Length: 535
Image (cartoon, rainbow, N blue to C red):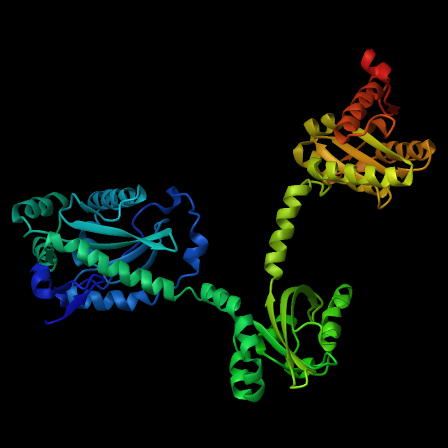
């Protein structure tokens, strides 16, 4: 064999100077490597999302070809122990050492040793298994992230010791002839060549991994596509074939629109975004598929008609044919004739629905109580600050009510937390029904709620709301498994600006008033008084 292996530093490794004893390739095991450490014992890595973007499957054939040339099995294993790509493996390993439970434990010890060496940052690790074979591994790093390890084995770095393997064959009951035949198939590699081999293989793996990151390439292309369109719109107008090639990109929606907002052409990706066929879209206007609340945003179109702008970009919502909302990032470029009149617009549309859902979820976690979906303490302070400003400008009053449920602990302790959670959700719904849209009800935690009444004209309005709340929360609640319970509520009330000009002060004083309401018999409300503090 005259095959040569070239690596990054242009070192040439020939088969003649690679092996002490070349393998018998025709007798390699047909079995691929199996998962070889306990994936359940490993925590999930932060790089799994990046790892899932990479298609390692095409490396299987590469590793098979490498195996055919060198006799060295290769595998890529992620940090959870999942084999992402693998060649066939040594028969000595697959038919003997990993079949016997005792020798398998030695194999697993070797696997874990190599993994732990790489886990602490080593760029190359090797380990001699107690079964007598050598394993090697190096990390695969993509975009600065250690996502997997490249593994080669099993092989010898010197001629195998017949006495050692003879004792091992007898100890574990292997068939002598079959066992020694399998040993004879294992190559003997010069130890100093191992880093070169690993550098070669890791270089291949990293290059192929980068090649498969189509999502990233698409994002990079998207960043430059607006500038490309602006520079080539005149050329695209004159050359329809080139325009169609650009239109047919599968990762971004494209359309051209006349001055009357009717599409001239659309690509398949845009059709998929909004659920209409190409023929249906050509008989609609952009306003027909735009969310009604976003139609006024099309003022940009009028500005383009008047020649005031040549490009614009915005986020908007389309209505999918089946009725659901599609959030998009729209970038538009104007194509004008020699006189500067608008001929048509070229639009590029990226579906950002998933991103918007993620943003909404994060916002919900940051500002809302996950159990009742009411505003949490953080959002409550913003609402109080806003309500004080509205009330101050109107010259009226604002009320802050601190609510504490009576007998809630009895329900929670006797019927369980699930029933308690259900009760809190029902309480939240009843409280919302007692208030105006401009008012706020928030949950501070446990069975404590805060109500903010904005822009109150007279104190009897506060009395009316407080009385309504006490009345509706005194009505029975039907919980899980048809348990019917009855609770009550005590309320402490402070007024702005009478009792303070700061949200925290108003809440604290409402808490003092709440204590007084409970002290005087529960199921009632009390206004804050300085006498409460004195007493």
